Length: 400
Image 1 (cartoon, rainbow, N blue to C red):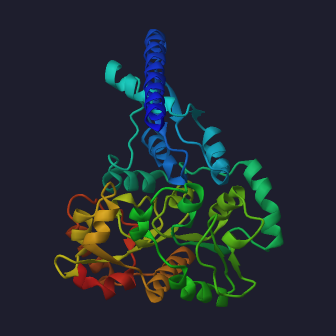
Image 2: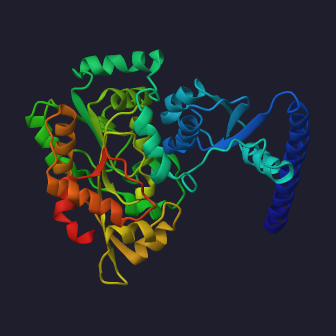
């Protein structure tokens, strides 16, 4: 009985998808007729995770100075969890975005397969967009013109939190460490352990948080949820994931109004990137997935190869560990060493001094920077304002 039931369900599923395919086919035929007067293009974005909106930002930058006579429509397949709704609505107010569920991918694949690429929006994703060659340069030229502002609605929702916690624009920093809490909460029942190599512990950020606390600069640990609480008590420190009044409007407003943000390897980095806020990238591995505009500083996780029985050089990390690679395989082949408290503190001090205008790099520091970038090869074209942390590089120059 169970086998018959399963076969019936599989048959119904096949019939359902064939039906969707037919609808897609005839809908695309209709669009082809309309194209004689106005070209309509489509593509799919992942609205289920905050980093899924990176492709639209790439599209926006690529088309900033181009004349676009097309009607471009973005389709979403996955539902947005409640926490990301403000972020979804933010983008929906800027572009034509519609949720069509599973029909979205079927429609776009049918469109591309039978009718070519004319009706596909040619934005690039992580796999294809040459962030290292084009995006950093483009952003550094026009970063202020490209900046998005918060909507009045988001600002209004976040204002009580700012007032209650005495947060003033530009007078606090945001800190975020990636862990498994968010995915396990919002997409349960899936084994997300292949992402574990990107995780980091908030304990390694304590030195940085304490430093800015002593400087009377408020620190907000951000994120909707987290595994570990901050074991630090001060009126200048907010452990936001564990505060009852949190919501996604406050998250966006915090990243928009902070002096700078300290971000680990997570899709959340898109928010300060879109708002063109200075970012300190910590515990990063995938250089080809760093997205910045001008004021950016980063430090990397060190990677120990179990096969070679040594730490990989920075160039080897770029060559062997790709954004589209297999996380489970990486975790079998390599050990990923988190940045320690001193590394994170030093790079955050560097960013703070850079913003305050009292930082001057020495010839030794600049020479090491040039050596680091040139040794990565032609893949990475240097954006002069974007640097690997000076103290971190000096400490690990043997890996250049």
